[in-house]
Image (cartoon, rainbow, N blue to C red; front, side, top):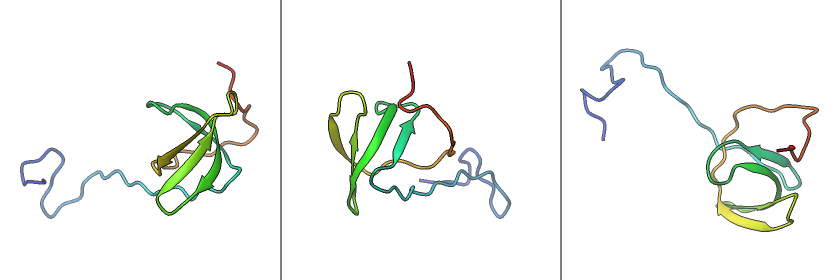
Length: 84
């Protein structure tokens, strides 16, 4: 709960704000997650309003998770999957 004495809170003033927007994935898209327990290269297999199914390009295993990703940056001409 926000209070007037919360860090970064300025009543009536301007503040630094981090803004996140869910990424509009498409099936077949190749993605790289950096950090966290799902870090690595994935291929988007299927999407629903609430979940996404990702496939590991190395093992071929598929996992269905609640949608959780947000776009940080897009790169072209990137090796995929990445060499460790």
